[in-house]
Figure 1 (cartoon, rainbow, N blue to C red):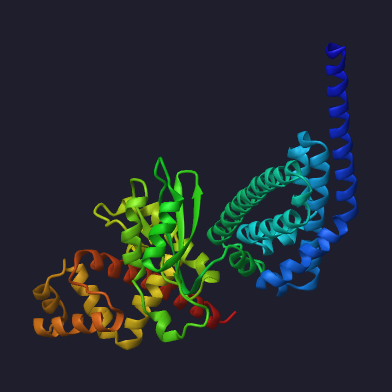
Figure 2 (cartoon, rainbow, N blue to C red):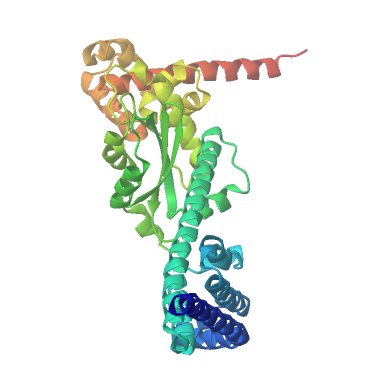
Length: 417
């Protein structure tokens, strides 16, 4: 008899446990609405940021809490459903809620929801209390996974958007959407900007570039195009900074020197400074043109400014370089005094010899010295240096050719038909 009674007792015990769980599930389903209401009330009392949310977002959070409670009941009925039921909690959240509620805030929501549920139902049975704790752990892990995937997607989206912005700057195809795209990237730069072009290293670490830039007080946009590395640099300042504050800071050429070790071997060219990031295509064109011809200067420094490569760029046919040389050198000198243009021509043609220039012009060498100093005062370049002499001579040649073309056009207009 005793051997036959054992299975009967086991069966009765199993049936009793099944009955208890069925009754518990029915009870949980009855009070699920009350649990959701109590949870919402506790959130408003405990979390100031939740109470300050717009009604629509508070309602969305309430839906998530309700989904969590319902999901727990389903999980308690079938614990093997953990992977997909836990994920369904966050599927109930609208996409904008993930952007407005941080991971830390989400964990606060989970903690308070678990506290409310545990206070109401944990006394029912020890098995139910353990189930709540186990399920809350699964939900917390799922929340971390959801936010990790969202961050990864945002990172990939940011990388694509950054590449698009840099490409727009390089090609000069900026449109009305460029400012909004720049703002979407979290650009903190205001005011002046410039473009740095060099060779990408074999193992490029973009995070190192960003860390170095933050230490230097600048913001950057980074683009890698094949073997070429392009960095757009702007001063990281507040939008309401005044002009005096904006003018301060490390010169861009110094910033470029600090970033130089992060580039690969080869030339490194810094474009001219422009007033704002939306004008950076001007700096980019000059930097790219300089990068293409930098090998024409045997002892070019690293980094080198694009304006220091004006002769090479002009010889390569860069119209911007030609125009820059004429407008910055030839025209100011011609407008100031024809004697300065004549003296500079003679000085350069005579191998930068003061005595030979003085003999050709029938003046004293001191007069030549004085005029050369005036040249430097007017345009900022010193003709006595070999590199700057090349720049000035190129400007004189281009200016003379341009003046001759203008003269011929004017003569053609005046010529009677």
